[in-house]
Image (cartoon, rainbow, N blue to C red; front, side, top):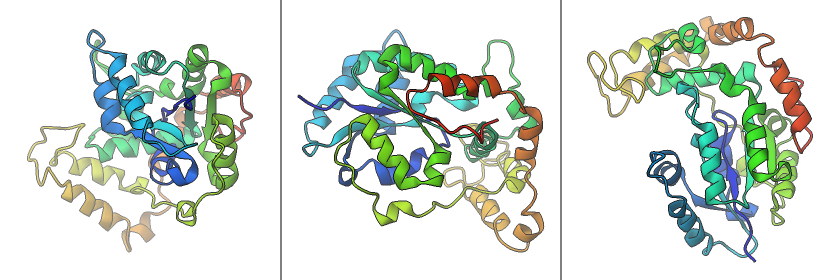
Length: 305
């Protein structure tokens, strides 16, 4: 009997890249069977009238056949939690598609304190070419019929409950980024036990190193203005379009702002985090309380807003 597949849906900015690069490998008892491009092609991109679960089911089966004995096939892609820049209104649809693809799957949902993840999402928006200031972006300004960012995407209990209803609460594991930061080896060991990975022993040394952070928040006003003249996924037709393919101007601006003297002068300036703390204080309290109640594994949400 083959092992059930583990499906990791994100959320975005919750150590997903670290898991994909350093955790989900055969040496740790995991065997990746699909990447972002596969997920996009077979799960998130197809129109509802064209979606066929057999396409992704077939891909998982073919690649799982090459898995080393005892390893757990895994699909890890945060795009399965939806696109946060448009409110992730499709997240429940993706959950239903995954149920049709792999009805016996184990589900991993990684989360992060909202007061920390919202600024990171805005900085990701800038990285993808966005031009809105943080207050307008986080307010989710949109025209009727056109979608925008919504903070309610990060009311985690709703999506967790939906996955529990589809796959069973016992098959949905929630991993907080805070637990990974506090005790990385202990957190991934508990995760492995919960999802049925009996081969995990310990993280390799290279996985324990802290990854480099993104550009600092004080750079945001400069970076969003650069995006007016350089193309990106959130702004495909800028006024000028300087070095659009390489995003050179954006990266050069970020590089300069990370270093002295500007880094020394501006290092304590966190405009996005300050705004988020004021604007969303108490916004997620009820959601987080319900999440703690329904989670099948114990959660420390003391750092959550």
